[in-house]
Image 1 (tube, rainbow, N blue to C red):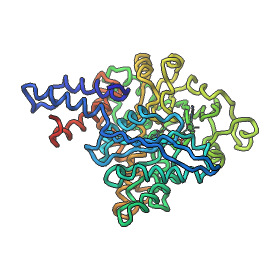
Image 2 (cartoon, rainbow, N blue to C red; image 1 turned 180 degrees about the vertical axis):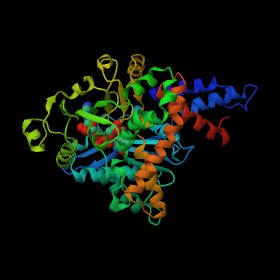
Image 3 (spheres, rainbow, N blue to C red; image 1 turned 90 degrees about the horizontal axis):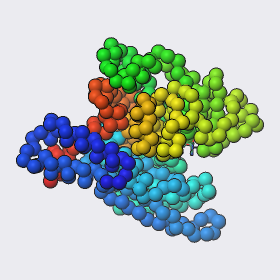
Image 4 (cartoon, rainbow, N blue to C red; image 1 turned 60 degrees about the horizontal axis):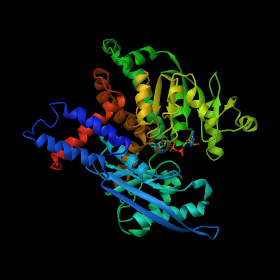
Length: 459
Ligand code: NAD
């Protein structure tokens, strides 16, 4: 059990094992045996598929590109998870991300298992024609293991609607006559995608923050006042205050989350900084987020990098180094870029009281422990960034029924589903001594364990 997610799964299982009500029908060593099965099932993926995609590039060269599809667990339904195009993709990372998907779906009661894919490329170095060839080859190589009822990929870092449309098109060509709308989610609306999918993860990230810091406190103020934990103190202290926010990452998820925070009428937010792969933009009086969204939409996703570009964006801001965003004196830091952004070398410099994981695994285990001990409230990835997979689930249902929801209906269902999870998790969190991450993991592992047990898999 090597990966960081596996380590937390193990600790969650230990906590469950100490709880006598967990698998209480089992006696005489059977409970220990079931527990050992659980550890081995949840700590290892069911399948790791790897291939080298052989691609004839537009410039005449022929390359072989490593590509992965990892299927972690499907006890709750077909494997589900994005395909990442990034030069840092590697097997361990894909395995870890696939296990996070299993836990995320279990936590939010989405009837899918956990999977993940990756291709080791920087998509910015390839032409559209090359990327099309890579997408087509990816589907051809993994075609035996993916499908609407087997394993359903979606976009992730470096991929989007265009790639999902291409991939679904190839799936359809390979399997004439088979259902194909549910083979990929995150497609364009014109091609069977769901309204609202593009902004769903970002909206969900901000909704998680808002619900914890505002809606839940508003409803449960006197109950919370009886809790003695530092986290209860943090949320009570923050309630009704004006808050300064910063967003590391301004892509699909970061820009939608920042825009939602900017437009929120429940909390008096001021977004003082945003960043991307190039720069941090800082403005003490608050940044004009709609203007920045408009600018990035027209400029290949990049924020303005110099005075001239800021002028073109009609935005006033100070330009700082890319990493500076992490160390600002603010109330809440949203990590919405990549993994491992807060680690042992920079954890001591974090000043934000609340850190929200919009990205998957942006804090290493060591930094997580350090920040928790320092009193930082961390809203974990599997809780906060599930909006995408939830709306992917709606897209899959809509594709099966060929009946499509309005955007309003999609967001109503999204918030309802996330709220159900929060109302399950937050009362437990404020009543026990565990971090919010561990509380979420315990909820997920309990759900998975119950189903594995009921289906006779714990032998
Ligand atoms: P994206 O590619 O659209 O955006 C990534 C952003 O991070 C860009 O603004 C990029 O410039 C920035 N960035 C890249 N390297 C950086 C660095 N070193 N420092 C600071 N910023 C950097 O990706 P996305 O879809 O927004 O995904 C962001 C994160 O959210 C990923 O961890 C992804 O796994 C996770 N996530 C995405 C979805 C989804 O629906 N897209 C769902 C769940 C989780």
